[in-house]
Length: 178
Image (cartoon, rainbow, N blue to C red; front, side, top):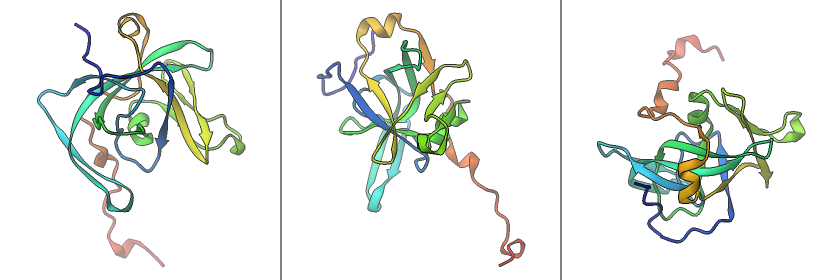
């Protein structure tokens, strides 16, 4: 049985841009991403955004998108443990969450010398594009046939995502010399 797709029911085959964000601690679904499943048992997350915007009780799920590697090959990228926002107009990928799965995320402008990309442990290189100073990942909503036949690239892990495991341990103020 194929996944049911998005609730909107209308996805075109156009490439969508999504942001790779080093300041975000969890991926958020958006256009170009097909819902595969919500986690079971059901879990929800609250997201805090720009200027205090809060989204409460968002379901956690796994999503698929078609990405193009630097060789021109298309692959099915799997994004697990993402917040599901069916109303979102823009997907966001957490640099921390990608790195946790072993991705090498080069999310700085090519003007700093390194081509922006996400490189998998298997050696796949997925180029990023800079737009208005932001690293962007191109996504395309997969067809039923692509879900069944396309090579899968797992960009985030399926274990319960807990970004706080990367928090800096408390270091008492007596250790800080000003």
